[in-house]
Image (tube, rainbow, N blue to C red; front, side, top):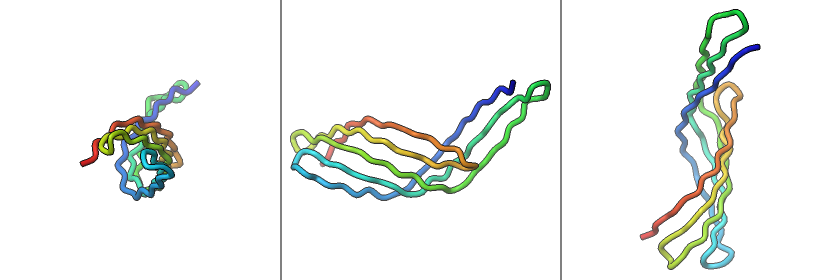
Length: 101
């Protein structure tokens, strides 16, 4: 049996489009490009540990919703799908507090 561990880091740049069906509620979609560094460390049965590193630019996309209180404070939840180097993928859910001024 092979033991395996995958670590990654990413930075991203993109655009966000939002829609406000009612004054205190926003829906939005976002997407763009990310640069990722993926390191896969594995130990095949009976062999020494090996590490492979993969880097590159790939797309990401996401969807989110925000509730705004008092026109200055927003609470949001967001899902993002990252496509990473060497066909790895990552799903992330963010919860946030935004202050608008």
